[in-house]
Image (cartoon, rainbow, N blue to C red; front, side, top):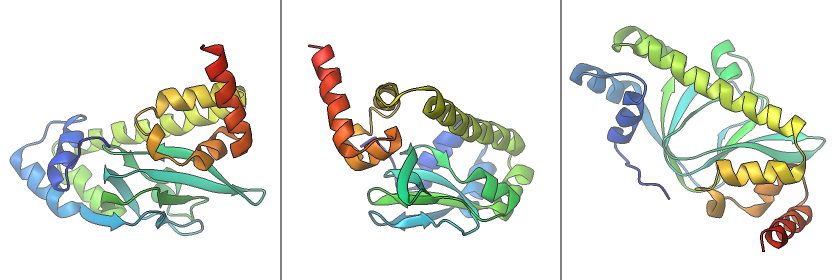
Length: 199
């Protein structure tokens, strides 16, 4: 598990990756964001509900999943130090098409849409933060879709290992298999093949 903090320092540090903050900004951030804790496998956002918050992950891992032909498919994982949300649902105030759940005990700092507007208005360079953070969320989603439709399962697994190497031992194999788009048994065969090729 990455080093992380259960206070607002970690959140403030990450925001400072995007913009500079003064003491008044940091004080306002501590009032706009709320700490929430989720148990292992607990839903953070349920399909069909309106996503009302932007989340910052302080500890833990979350999984974005979707039911496709009756099968639960993982398509994004996020861990400590990352912002996440269903961007379309959050911005357009429409029902979400997927679930976000905690793979392990997870602590997040959340901010509502209305409080985010206050952030944009009152925080120095707040709107710049919003633009950069949303760009990051959007590019992550686009890159995953491009990978899924342009590469085979073995290539998707290798990219998964490279992208999520720090989380690899913390994500159950059946979630990894669903992300790659194969059964757990097929994933085992892919892994064995890769091991043989590297001997």
